[in-house]
Length: 254
Image (tube, rainbow, N blue to C red; front, side, top):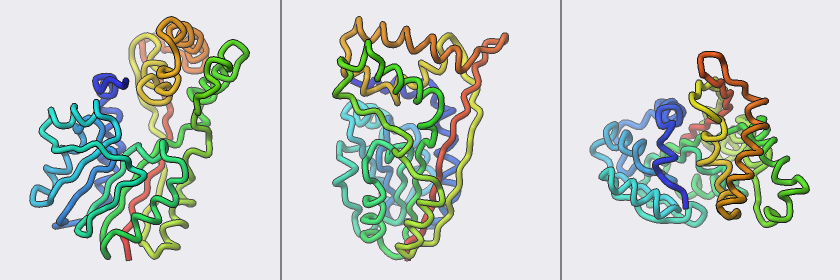
């Protein structure tokens, strides 16, 4: 089970890409605004403040996240992003750091474009750091002799989990959209012991945590912590720098 509180530990750092994504959406008076994969709802609330006259729709596949969003006053629902269908009046559709979990999401984007009304805005952001040491070391440890049997059924996302900005631009331009695509690498300051490990525990390590008993999980974390500490050394002032690449796309339907 994913604790929403863990997701919010670095809330400001996770929120910056969201705000920079939504800033490129130029919708003035949208009828319906959707947050597809709303998480605990803290960022969804900013959509309501920007477009107060719009019908706000929010959903997530995690019941725990939906409960957290509802506690924030967001009328969120549990839904599968892979099968969800936008309503005909959806003028803004935002998907923030979700589609990396969806295999074959290029086809999903094409389907959304076909279903959205003319002139609608589709904004998505995904992490592009699957070749970063944090993820490479995790996959390497999971595949090691000690852990590969216990983690045989765990699927960890590789570099092919997301595409490059130009690939998404081609995809959506071919669908007739006007496209704005870019990438940004944030050098994020983290603090505390095992800062990078704590950062990825609520995201990249979720499948591993779900597969391991408590003692095994503690041992895996301990081994990974040593590898990450070497790859991401802590400065004398206690700061650990985490370069984090993200891929952004904002498209307007034909």
